[in-house]
Length: 102
Image (cartoon, rainbow, N blue to C red):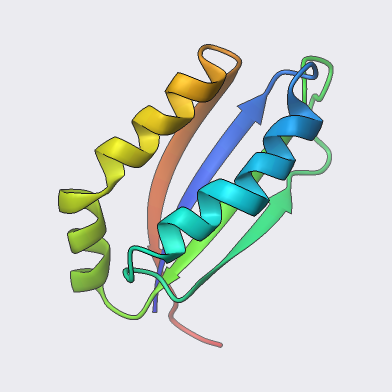
């Protein structure tokens, strides 16, 4: 199992609306590409939230090939949609992980 992790720090001003959008629109759009089976939203704890909360979304793919398809065909458009909606009110970084034990 491959985990595509997107960590996002959002400004306090958009935190509630962003969380609703990611849950109701963005994650379903990404799952609907067929590249991932499901996703989980987590909030980082014990971090400096004075400027806003930090979330991670973990997208689960059954293979590296599925992840590669997402990156080649869908990632740029999905990232652009987020930027078009939220502009500079968030910062995100991405990492790729592999599950090695349940």
